[in-house]
Length: 250
Length: 309
Image 1 (cartoon, rainbow over the protein chains, first blue to last red):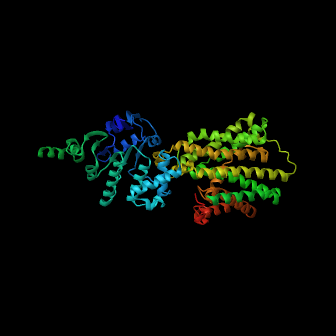
Image 2: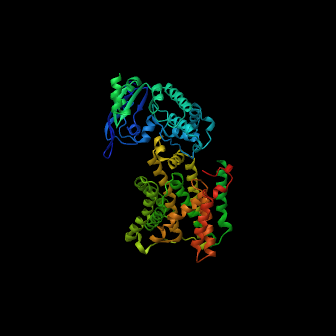
Image 3: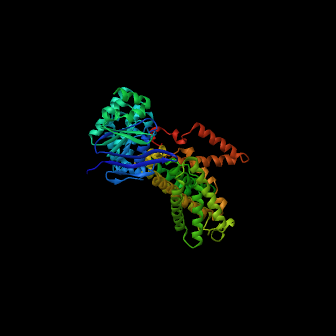
């Protein structure tokens, strides 16, 4: 199939008087890794929540794989091939690690039976390097391991599009490097990835394209190089005065 | 898994033999009550234990079942058929109610479910033509010869219903539905995100928690052959099963039935020996049990038995 995998046109999300997203138009191509960046409160997580049906868009239309997904429920998004991880990791604490992953495989429809789901879960755990922890309660994992569990859960849904919400936040340098090679390996399987990230190192090394949100508006889209030199982006992050000084120096 | 089946089969076989060697009506009445509360407690486990929604709607389903069974018998339906119909009625009612109530969570859901029994009680009270209102409703007394034979009949009936409830609970706990409910109980938002249709699953759990209670309510009505609103819509029918499940072990398969037996044994003993302060003593015992055995009596069993959920 051709055309973009995800197409947002004029998506707006309003909470009372606050426009968390305003008129966002963005297309995500098949197989690309796109980074979504922006200062705190820019609306990055809201965008993920709108795409996965947690929040309803107040206006606009969303197409996923040429199907209209405007107004679908989260469980429908999950079954339709949109996987996500949470910024604040959300395991089922009293289930074992393998049960956590098997649940994703089973309920998103990727596995037909619980037995198959467990088999698939074990593969995904091996992929993220957690197979030795399979029978432990999810609550006992370290933060880095929980982030990897989130990845395994996301993968187990056999998604076409994986939305990663700050999978690297709170990790140390070595852990970030591990997570990065994982993300590349996932992309190599043909999964399209939208990644929300604050670490510029991550954004600049793995992303094909970047999209920048500021106060709910998409202010810049392009290759990482284009985006980091965009005056509006510099202004959003570092303020008007800095941007002006920067412009003079160039 | 095998252990569970053998243990359950042995337990129910032993219970089925009870009427033949414990023939007196008093023991059988206690046994029947125990089984009836066992049904209520196991049923609560579907919604309260598995899905984590603290439902206080048990009394509503019980009273509704009792009245549905009684009214249908008054209209000429045979006794057993009226019990089945009462179960079906409670099942459908819970489905409709669930779609409205299960949007609420935690305390809000608890309060809303608590009110349901009160509302139906008032409705039954005022529908005098159909239900007899505050005068209550007489049921045909089953003709079974001796009082003992009648007591044994209702003991066996409750035993069958509780066996059916147990099987439903056991099968559900090992099914996709049970797995999904455990996910919902731990984190509903995350459960939604991995593709669980939480509304559907919760409603199914709520309906399962109603159907056997409805049948038990109708069987109770036939057993005591006179019902009135304050009796069958008593809030204690909602509260006691929860205490029993907490006592036995939340979310497990054997917990509710163990809790029901333990609770009623305690209640009977305390009531016999401390007539004037029995509720106080019972309350104290429950507080102590919850303080020192927060995961219920089942947590005393060796872990390798795999009794916990």
